[in-house]
Image (cartoon, rainbow, N blue to C red; front, top):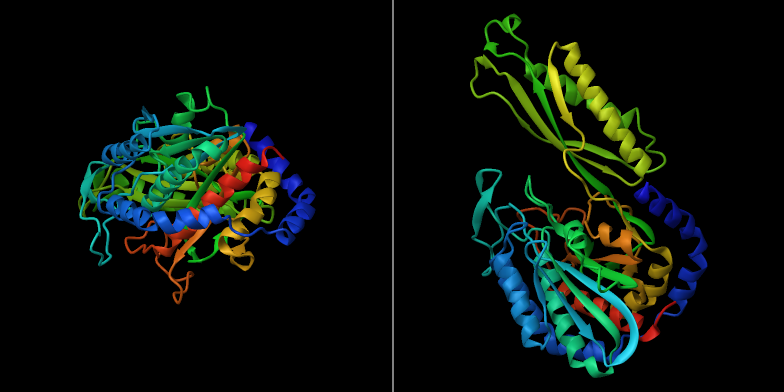
Length: 443
């Protein structure tokens, strides 16, 4: 109910802030001179940090080296970072020399179980263990860039601390990609452990480098931006028998195949996708070991993506219902965990805050380079912060000019290639947003 109510308000509010948005576009300010000066001074540092993190990636809830590097940098700036939040989270407060609002800036630090296929001098050669298998590890989503950018922003804000109005919380978050099975992590665990207990910001800002947008552009939209993400696990239980006599057992492979096919109707025939998009995807199938043995069981795992809480809950129920009845039609049993653990709610940008900060993004990138992207089926646990306080999340284009973003290797690809000019734009945009909000006070 909490998510549903938060969703409904922004949808109604979008139309109410259209006039604000138009005014904001007409009032796009120039980039602050202190932002330009800081960007030029820190550009090489941000790039070096990003490359170092890229070469030494760490999986979710395993970000020990990354967190240590971040904490070391913050201490060198004279800050007093708190470490060990949600396992490896690092948080520090910059207290300005003048009274003003409180805001938070967030960067995520974890990498993915992906083997890099880029020819870079700082390409990852790291391996680790994931779900019991040896895997390559790569910053295939760009969190190395986010971490480097926020480290740069921290240094820039500290240099102007005496004249800074208000306070800034720096959130270096682990496990955005999701904690390993059986563990907690990410934004939800940071909040659970009291992130906002003693410091409640009035606004939270975050960014994400994005392959679907060309370098030099920023993507932002009011209201819903990214989908809710939920995992499911379905186990179809049959009875093992010889492959030559399937009538001697119950074939869970055939039942699972039928289940997968029927599950496609959950979206195509049972969900009102004219209202908002939804996705049900099976990502892995595991069952059997030999060509002439029908196994006892088959395991299926996948993801559900939605924007509306009512649709989200209905898809949970429909997928479980299809699983149970299709399995029963084959004489099989099923254990359907839909979802199998708490997921991420939809990422929803506060409409008024987004309209207010639009001129800041336009100042950083140029008015013509700030676009409104379509709804994204990808998910972000930044959404948990947005449930607590007004928030704005935006995309920074990361695909080099001359390459079609529609065909460029996407985030999570082993060939994801960050155009490093996005580091500079990410730094400038986050700095501009932070300073404009701090100097502007409450709306």
